[in-house]
Image: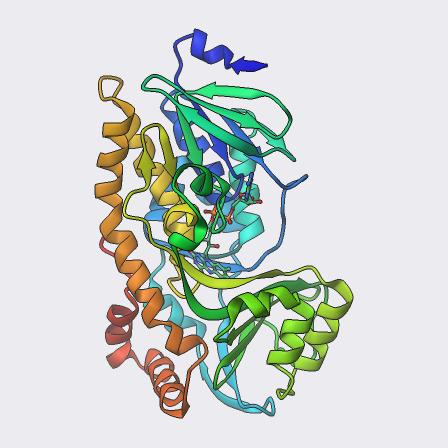
Amino acid sequence: MTEHLPTQAAGRRTALIVGAGIAGLATALFLHRIGWHSIILERAPARRSGGYLVAFFGIGYDAAERLGILAELRQRNLDPFQLRYVKADGTHHFSVPSSAIRDLIGPRQLTLLRGDLEEVLHHAVRDHADIRHGTTVESVTQTEDTVAAHLSDGTVVEADLLVGADGLHSQVRRLVFGPEEEFRVDLNHIVTAFTLDRHPAQIPPQTSTTLTTIGHTVTVTSLGPHRTAAFLVHRTTTPAADLAKGPAVAVDDAFADLAWILPDLRAHLRQAGSAYFDSVSQIVLDRWSIGRVVLVGDAAWCVTLFGGYGASLAVGGADLLASALDHPATDISTALRAWESRLRPTVLRRQQIGRRNTAAHAPANRLRLATRNLVMRLAALPPTRHLLRRHLDLHPDD
Ligand SMILES: Cc1cc2nc3c(=O)[nH]c(=O)nc-3n(C[C@H](O)[C@H](O)[C@H](O)COP(=O)(O)OP(=O)(O)OC[C@H]3O[C@@H](n4cnc5c(N)ncnc54)[C@H](O)[C@@H]3O)c2cc1C
């Protein structure tokens, strides 16, 4: 059965968005503001929560302000944290005060759980879009005038635009652009991130405490008396083999020699099992749209956690996409190309920063570890702070 969206008949433009993560929800919201109607397909049976911490600033923050969701996001802001660095035995090494971090990034930034950002976007969009959980797209065909998607529930939906917002391992990208292997560049690290419903004794309140050794980083952030975020990165030459082990075994194997809080985190993973667990990989495509199909967010450009700007790009990119489409006289593929040329330089710069930052997250040798420590210590000193800000591109001139 082919579903013609009722709004098509009423002359409204329509989008089928695959993925209800940050990019998909933000795209639906910005399209609603220019009068479009969206259906959002989400593979997961229910909305995700928790996740990991994201720093949210730059074009994402500006776009959230335009959406009118900043006040709600501020209520969920988890800053400020003191950054503490510990030695392998857990003893204090050095600290960077929260005031230094605020000075570095400036006042227009938030630290949010990914799930909280998604929840605020979801609340803002749920009355304006048709969100279908437990559904995905199985095939796509397009003509000059329309794009049709066959869905996993057996229906066919026709729309003016199909948006692939389905993340690093995008199905839309696979169906329309080609196999993932052609576009995925592995940075040879694995990330495991999860939250605990308690506060481990080793982590002082209002701190984000990090242990970095050669090839490993573990950061544990206190989010209050009953919640803690843990984030582990390890270097590997065989990411696919590590992923095949699953989070509990991969973390057991990679972090076996580390003490401090590791036995506790490893036990949690063995019991609870649920975690964000994936390779750190960028997506490099020479175009983000083909006809009426466009990729956004991690599906299009994944800059990685090392790029530190993926959530901001997902929201800011959605804002720019809607601006480009907000000209009824311009055809859709021309608007998509204009959007891409506006956003691509920012994405390329962030991907470059992501590749450069791999050395800081899980340094390959002692020299790189010492350099990372020196850079972080400079952040604590006002005279050198501006150098670090420029180095990390924390004030993107977007
Ligand atoms: C540990 C970590 C730390 C990070 N830190 C930061 C940071 O500090 N600052 C920052 O800006 N960014 C950060 N990022 C990056 C940021 O989280 C991502 O760039 C952002 O979440 C991407 O959003 P997305 O919506 O494009 O993709 P995703 O979050 O991957 O969402 C994709 C959605 O599509 C759904 N989906 C997948 N496949 C299908 C399918 N076939 N059909 C239907 N639905 C599907 C998924 O279930 C999901 O809901 C970090 C990432 C990680 C992993």
